[in-house]
Amino acid sequence: QVQLVESGGGAVQAGGSLRLSCAASGRTFSSYGMGWFRQAPGKEREFVARIRRGTGSIYYVDSVKGRFTISRDNAKNTVYLQMNSLKPEDTAVYYCAATARDGYVLASEWEYDYWGQGTQVTVSS
Image 1 (tube, rainbow, N blue to C red):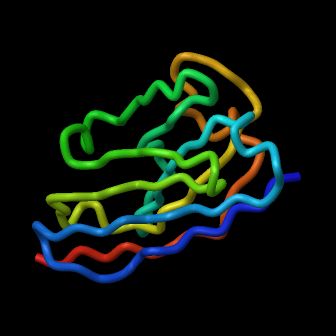
Image 2 (tube, one colour):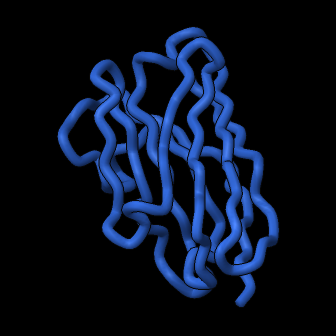
């Protein structure tokens, strides 16, 4: 079992920055690929970014490339999402997720085994 707790959400103006953190329980954090998803009001949850276990390779959805950075600190059992140049359309509840699978994309919800409770990000224009 892995428990995930997100933090760092809040309200910012367009162009601002936030850093989300996701702390994981357990001693096998490095064995999991980690992802960030988001769900805007009235919309389905969508993939944002992921970082694989082992190689640490990274993949982003096109809409956040160049603005968001995912990273992980295995010593702290934490994955981060640095969000810069935020836009109103980035407003959503952001979720981190963990997967025991390994693969190139890992951008689908069904591929993830554990989920956090979510943290709200609100970007005003």
